Length: 157
Length: 170
Image: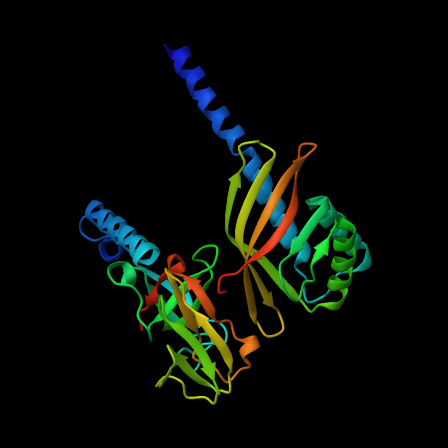
């Protein structure tokens, strides 16, 4: 009886751990993305910027499509994304980006997912806030979740 | 030693009362009530930005009453809190038109169903012009009170009714 209970408990633990693994991975990647687009007052040096660029590259699929509205231009493909990111990090003022109210919906196929969130950017200079609702479509490519599409949701139309 | 013991006992009575168990229960009930009220009934918010000035100043603190529109739909003139992906970031806007109405701006004046609307809460000059827009079913047309800023820089438009979280308490 005791053994059956232990096996059952272990099975439940394994079920919950494996069930949420994909969601945890996606949330962790969103944290990495928020960190990569946040810029402190001291700026980002060339070498750390290279590292951040590699991080950003690793988060998106090669054929990603990004359309989150101004000031970010529409982006097609990870190469264009890298160029835009590199330029933006050199030119923009200090900014802190956070993703709030994140919801993750995993697809039945096991290789697709959708996330909905509010992206909040706070300018360090005047503490001004820009917030936008964003929907991201994810694809699991070779066992790794990558952002395939990112699109702004129109709260007011 | 006796005085020390008396002082400790008095301090203990002040902190945990004569019955520590009852005090613990009261504290737990108070904490639960506070959590429920500020999580589900009145959401504390800090307003950022100038779009609702002068009615609500940048940096002011308020509470969003979640139950306000449970019994009745928002009416024209109401200020509503609009959720984005969730409730952590919300927009504060004023309802200027309800489902089925047509809304436009002509020379800074709000026009609803072809009639000019006098808005007491607008105190700053406005020169907005906007083509007529039809408000669909389950939608509201919302605008901020600060119309001195250019129309392109001011977030306004139709919003789905299900995005309305509530209204400000003050």
